[in-house]
Length: 198
Image 1: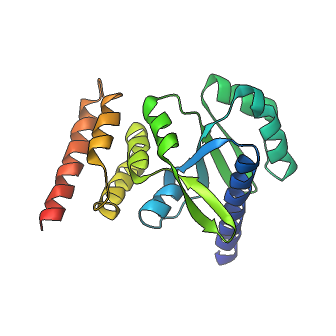
Image 2: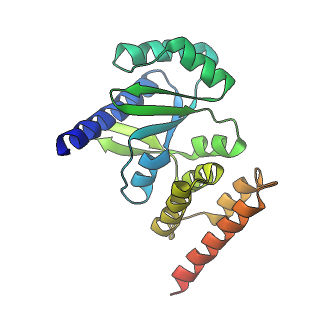
């Protein structure tokens, strides 16, 4: 089992390096989101995929995909283009690592992409990672149990630097009809305030 875990870890590291290098070479705007980004901005946790918020012009998409296929990503170019244009999301693989792309169609995604900052991934490789605020917002949209746990982790790990006003402002743009999620978020923020007071 350790050999499988090491292989997955090595593939995941390499997939992120190759994606970041390719995005940089083609001047493609992106931000790492999802579990891997939470591990970088919060606490380490196991993940088997790479989630990317990606802003690429439709005309540039074929060239980007051709380059990724050339360097070892396993994808059906026409399917990826169709899904990304129609559904605003798509997935493909690098070895056993799943790569998920999400188009920034919501204003909070655009803000998350704009605010992302560079972190050192491995020697010689910088990657753009969503801020803690951006990750909290993207996790609030998905809102599965793991997303809720990630929000709590991010709140605690970043409590000294978190811009709560920004989170509330950006969330308000999509919160209509989401009273349950909004109440959950406000409760999580209230717990954070109580932690700071202790």
